[in-house]
Amino acid sequence: MKRLILLSFCFITFGLLSAQNPEDVFKEGMAKMEAKDYNAAVEKFDLALAAKPDYIDAHFQRGMAKKALLQYNLAINSFNKVIELNPKHLEAYLERAELYSNMGRDNEAMQDFNKILEMKPDYLEAYVRIGNMYRRKGDSEKAIAEYQKALKINPKYDKAHYNLALYFFNLEKNAEAMKHVREAITSNPNNAEAFALKGEIELNQKQYRPALASLNKAIELDNSVGSSYTLRGQAKFFTGDRKGACQDWKKAQELGDIECEEYLGKYCKK
Image (cartoon, rainbow, N blue to C red; front, side, top):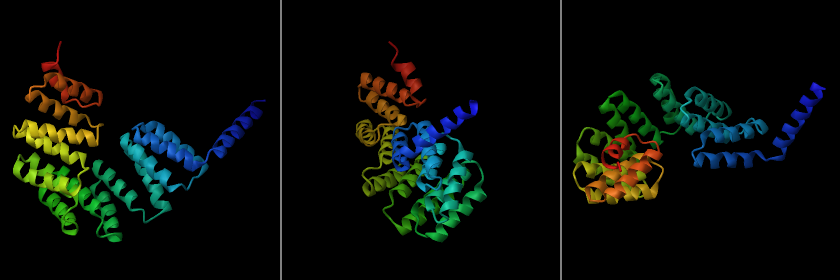
């Protein structure tokens, strides 16, 4: 009897998988990714892969979801499978390289980056990710050299300008930072990170109304980043809108940004 029940369950499960097209399940997984519900996304990608084991896009997006969940080894396993199925999948090498870098496995990261650039020497994102790896290690000269390589290929590459701006901002070189962040915005007016960084630079320079305008634009482009609300709360506070500041800091807290908690405790107690 138990065996019959188990067989029936297997047939039902297989029937459900067969009835639902793996591409449709994949689309459901992508919707979960968009909603940042990464565990649910993994479940959908697993279902798609159960029906279609060689579904490259599902393996790749499963890796991206695992990366977002900080499950780096599991993410690497997914990217390994993508590369096994398609040895020329540049994005899989790129994402795996960044994970290796995050885990301190820089030699393996560079092997993947070199593989990418061997296949596609003008892959701009690879230069930026290599630069970011060097920046995290504190090797500023090599970081800048990689960003400049990207800009030599495409002087309007917004991600390279943004990362150079971030580098100079962290050194408190606001003029250089502002120069590159403006280049990033000119090159890509939809770069929310660049607008947020511009607002932060302006806050540091006590240019509160320009900062407010920059941060309004950052949030208009991407309303899911808690730090943008924290910064905009500061701009509102210094322009006399304490109520609006507290609303932004509460929103930042909801989105998981811990920097806002000091301001909430200090300025927003009833």
